[in-house]
Amino acid sequence: MKVDIHQISDSGLSIDYEVRENVSSSYLAKDDEVSARLAGMVSPDSSAGYVFSGNLEINCILVCDKCLNEAAYSSYSDISEKFSKDVSEGRWSINGDELDFTEVIRANICALLPMKILCTDNCQGLCPMCGKNLNEEQCECEKPIDPRFAHLSSFFKEEV
Ligand SMILES: [Zn+2]
Ligand SMILES: [Zn+2]
Image (cartoon, rainbow, N blue to C red; front, side):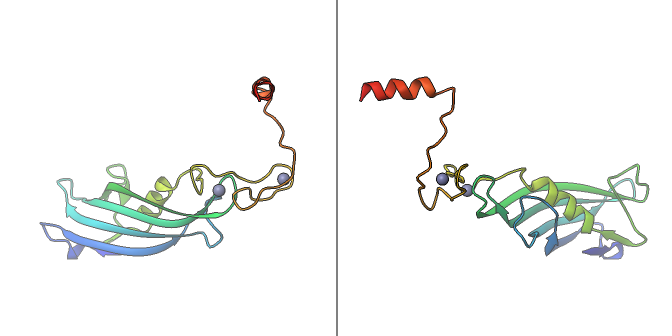
């Protein structure tokens, strides 16, 4: 994912990369892989640097925070990144005659990954007593009653 700056004309260079990146995240499923597609334009800017403007799309498998099943996740973001010979000028430095997008993609993948994910909005999670996946089967465990609602449950019993 390196762009030779000689390929970038005054009007810019259009790029479109599809990559698979290994990113460490505790919510990524075992293979830790994220597929990403970066597409957009790299153009020279006034400060003798380059600007990439485009978007990044990611697809990966995450592990549900409640039931630990795998759930597909995808996200998309417009991004704009600046490359410069002088790092203080831009976020990314120009290495010789090349713009290296490897770290740009990794950093943006990490920004797009959520802190946690649920497989469905109403995931039932695992039984805290026996560990069964309550989306797949019910168990016989007595559920502990949240003390905040204990008075409500006795209220409903009286109603029946
Ligand atoms: Zn779940
Ligand atoms: Zn149980």
